[in-house]
Image (cartoon, rainbow, N blue to C red):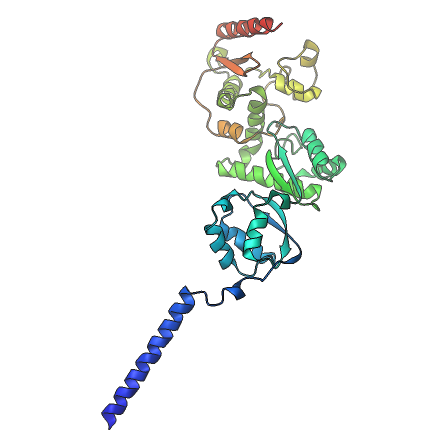
Length: 350
């Protein structure tokens, strides 16, 4: 009788083990509680959610769960993966509801009407004063708040610099700003982005100020990004006294630095009186680089500083201000020919 009993126990045990393994497979591969994994909707109240640049469906789902919009990430990730239009979700700040269904949450993120806060696009080449004016116009933060917040610029982690300013340290680009953001919040956001631009290129902190200064000059001196690198090389050649300079450093003599001093918008040239202005930023009067950046440089200008092309240029001039075509020269004689070309073009325009 022992053998039959033993067989029965083995059979029952086998069924039990198989049942456990089967249960594990089912619970791992079949969502038997799909309804419980999602809120019934339609939701209520208000939730503010930020979708960052480069967020995946999984990233967005995690944010929605964290903010109480959806119950679990699974249903949202599944719907996101099977919705071709989901890739159209724009980075930004959205006003949604609490306890929404995953499907409704996705639909809400695809509707630009649900974008909240302030979306501001700061162009490359803006001075700090211009940035404050734009931000004040497009948010509820007064210019005076930005000016006050900018005084202690090192409190944001910006290294102390010879210009004693955060000019040039705020990255241009698109920003989504919360309704209740302060001037300090916005400055922090813009500086952190610029810091990433600098560290991402491997530029040492000790070189940040010089790099931003040179990048800002390139940004303001020429219109076409493909010329930025040549401007950077020209700056270095003049400061080093390369080529025709025969070892003697040359003043930069950039109109953009005079425009910065006078507060004028960039134009083709400057007057004799403007070039005589006594300011350390006036590169017609003083040698070397100006004390600091003269505007916010963009990514292309920073790329140019990080890896400028080789060349023996000492001069450049825009020969067509409609197209921004700029010609570079290694000798004064060649430069005079380029200037004559610009004068002829200007004369043709009356």
